[in-house]
Image (cartoon, rainbow, N blue to C red; front, side):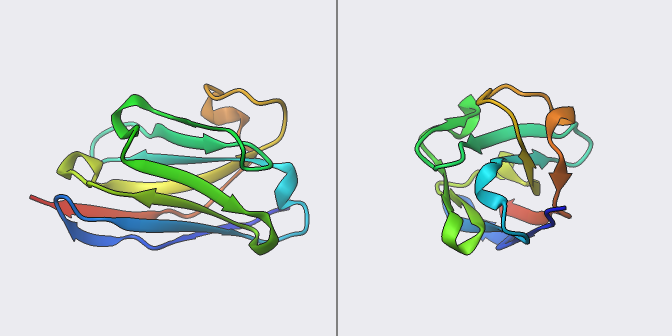
Length: 125
């Protein structure tokens, strides 16, 4: 089973940037779609972005389009989330998750097979 570990979170001011990493164990990482989700205090977890197996296709929730970029390096078993122009509303615990199956950007959370433990992102105003 693939295990996921997120890193790169922290405290940043409004307008700043962070790059999150999601490192995976196992040799089959390239066979998975990878998504980023986030959960703000008192709110349900929500989808942020997803990337296909080869890294050629991505999809974002509207609130992060133009600010966040998801990418992957299958040789390093790692997916990244570059976050620019951060806003206080981006404050949340960020999780990465993997799933098999066909490309479906709006796949529900229950279709994701494994999740990381999360990394905290805090944006101060």
